[in-house]
Length: 64
Picture 1 (cartoon, helix red, strand yellow):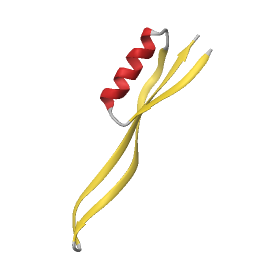
Picture 2 (tube, helix red, strand yellow):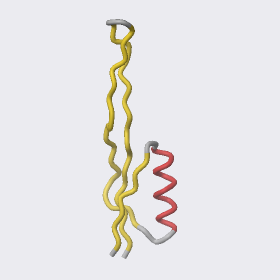
Picture 3 (cartoon, helix red, strand yellow):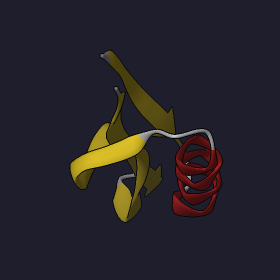
């Protein structure tokens, strides 16, 4: 059995990767995962204006 974890910074790209692996005989295991890899507060002077988040999407795949 082979095991791989696919990762991407966008859901669209991860979907494409998963679909390509499925065509090659791989199967997704469980649901996908999303983690915040960076949160950065933005300020204008001392005033907080927004918080930016960077995310990473993942899917575990196996092939027998």
